[in-house]
Length: 607
Image 1 (tube, rainbow, N blue to C red):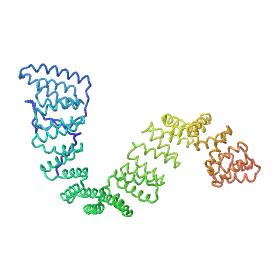
Image 2 (tube, rainbow, N blue to C red):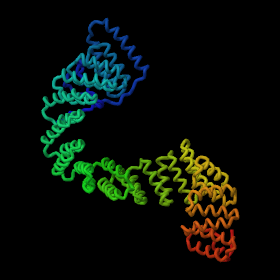
Image 3 (cartoon, rainbow, N blue to C red):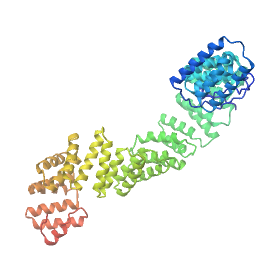
Image 4 (tube, rainbow, N blue to C red):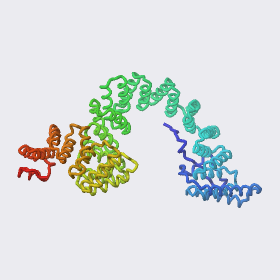
């Protein structure tokens, strides 16, 4: 099957391979360059100096008699040198030689052509167009001159002019019918559908019924909302390629897109008879059954499509993204998880397969599995910051402190300017009881987060905890105050700040106010109730402390809360109850003070 598709914007600019005699290549001469190189733009000064020199030389040559043999030899040598420097991409030297050759032979098509090419490659598009137009006028039978002119015009977004150039090429140059396809593409790019259609009809007359012609005509008919003719072209494609399922699938897609659902099912099943595992046909059926409200059939076809290794990974990701938006809907979750598993199975070395599977697991509450799946994605592509961010977030949520430090360190090697990574790294050090390292990471990240108020609040929150661990209370309080200045209802900070003040026995009225606001907002939170109770304890309001601790103990058997309860009972004179509470605290597990065993042994309060 013959194909002529060429994109005008990446068109190879082919110059005739010149011989020394005459310099003018014939229409069938082989090209001397394979593709247009990246332009290297000359400075304005360089272009001005070259233009001035050629103008002076042109005036001189205007009064000259015909070239002598020596002058002809010189011009050919200059031309050859110019071509050499074009190949070497030294465009200033190329233009200098070619302009000198031009002053001797301004009517030579090959010289004009090479000047056009050198100017185009150096970014001087206007001059490129002028010289290319001259080359075409001087030799109207060389297709490469037209192609270069069209390229320079298209580079300046002069699409109508480029279209006219292609039309002239087809008209003037023998055996140039293959360029009808590029001409049709240009018409399509300008939405000139009748002209594009007429051009394709000419191509069909010249080359017969080609698949490319039928396909392009079909696209034109669709853009003209002429469904019957588009379907007819599709039937022609199927008839010409009876064993090729892609044309059948394309026809089924057209039926489905135009709400002709029974026809879409019929043609999709026709494609499946040709290729039983064709995933596109399965997806068309799934879409049709969705429109017909047949969820069982939808699920069946989707599973079959995703079971096929031929399903494009990007298409699978797009479909799964649609399901992720519906999660954690329990009706959707099982199918989404199975489709994600199939995607990974069929694309085991694609990072994006693991990435989307991790997203599905994340949205269905499978955080540990999601973290491990994201790590597999990073095995194949470490360049995605979002993947690293998801991994460290899940490390933190899963209390995987060692992993949090390892992964945040690895991520910071690649993304040292990403503030969130420094946040999680600082959090990891804080959880590992390494407050100095935590402060270093958090302070650095906070500087990176300048201008982002939300991120700076998060950093200040952690810095308050870290400086508290270092017993740098002034900086700890300053960090907490900064958070509350920006977010007065940050209840996590209100709780921590008030608790640490109570431990230090400082600013107890302020601590009581903050803890009281927190408990009022969350009256059943045992941690917040414990904090409020301990502030009251420090203020010697033992009855109030007892009341709040008993509320907390309705929902928790936390060891530290039980120990606090014992301390309060002791202060209230309930010695037997206090010792019993301390004993229950020791059985409850870690979190108690270093003095608990002494309290139990001596049955006496120690602070």
